Length: 159
Image (tube, rainbow, N blue to C red; front, side):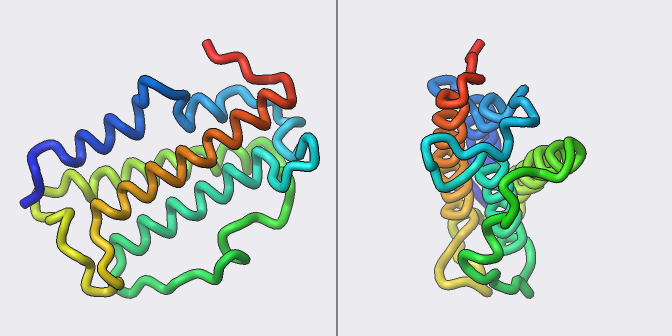
């Protein structure tokens, strides 16, 4: 029902972003000891921005795929309390869930039975395309913040 290639185009925009660093680029090879640092009194660490991105993206996926979606409390449910992950496994799991949830969202867009422009019955006028654009916009915003923190910490070297 949707335009041919809408899901593929979304995947291309999110995963390739040839003009800018991707989220994956931004979080690749961050030294573990730097994940909780907040240079120059910035309000968030790389870990907090990454976890916030994960939580928000998962929330959008849940909203789009679950008619019984329950809204989270803003901002308490969207931001981690800790500055840093407890261990490297927690960091890797967060990154993997971001990837897995993005793949699941792209699958929603690629579903031939989905009309990406029709509002959800359980929302307030939102549709799949709007939520896709929200993921792109939100992730891009926080990717930029992560890159700034990495530059301030002196550990960003784009290849």
